Length: 167
Image (tube, rainbow, N blue to C red; front, top):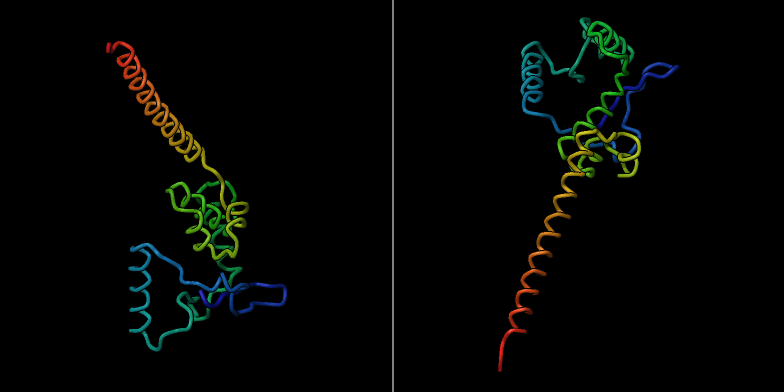
C-alpha cells in the first residue's frame, strides 16, 4: 500500500500512508487476486489503465464517505449489529489469530510499527482460542507429568531390585 485516500473536513487527501510501516504489500487470498486481475483486464480493454482500481460510474475515484455509506447500508440490510467499516480491520486481526496466525504476522498485515499496538488495540481473544490455549497447555503439563512419573517408577523399580541383590 503506497497511497491512501482520506476524507477530512477540508476534502479528500490522496497521499502516502501515515507511517513507514503502513507502506507495504497487502497479501490477498487467491480468489481476491483472481477477481482483481479480471477487473484489471476489463479496465485495460476499455482504454488506458486508470490510476485507481475502483471507480464511480462517472469514472472518478470512489470517495471514502461513499464507501462508508454503502457499507452502512449493507450492514443495515443484512440485519447485523451496527459496525463501522474500520471494525472489519479488528475482525480480520481476530480471525487471523483464531486461525493460529502468529501475532507478528498479524502486525505486518495491519502495518503496525509495534507488536504491542497490534496486541493491545486490534485483537480480541476469542473463546475458542482461549480454550485451545488452555488445552494445549494442559497437554504439555500432563505429558511432562507422565514422563516424570515413568522415570520415577523405573528408578524405584531399579532401586528395589538393587536392594534385593546379594553379594
